[in-house]
Image (cartoon, rainbow, N blue to C red; front, top):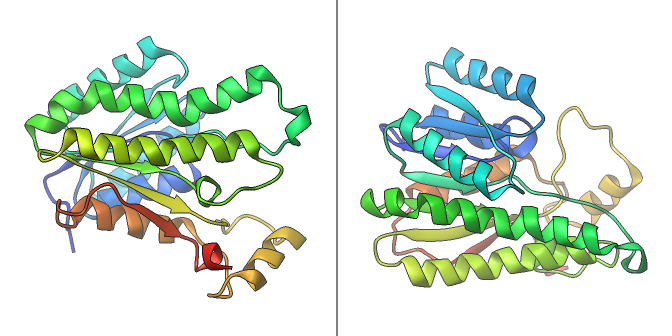
Length: 244
């Protein structure tokens, strides 16, 4: 079912992994897509090709999320190429494992710059068009923003901040727009080998498996098509891992 037929969407970091699945899922639902990439040009081109093979329309735009000029330029380019914007998915983010005492100031700032500042700037740049079309913003947070992970202090803090940004924007941008957040837990990919860590989390998770990119995409599609009365929500896609 093409639940998003005739709509347009901008997905940051849509060249690979979860972002790629989000772009493909929205395209299959009928949307025209723009994805952003920084270093993954060939992956971005491949994703665009896949969408076109599905009968959809897509474009790839270069964007350095840590450069405000690049972020605002990417937003303008996406809106121009799509002829408008109905949905912004702030998916691109940084992830790093580091002991607390080893995190440098630069690493801390980069984590917040990518995971909080960039979604804020991109949302800000897209708000006039999204408000005009009564659109939506969906942020991709993390279970790490809901639960503390000892070796991910800067990452967890940044995702918690993104969750709060989601709720603050939802309140500020209502009633014209809705703003929600999907918070994935342990996500594995078909090409990944099972490790002791992934096996541990699968066993620990009440649903007895780890999540997939398709699980995250289904949650994003829900927020993209659900009643706009649903706003300011943080939806954990974790198989119940947050309950443990």
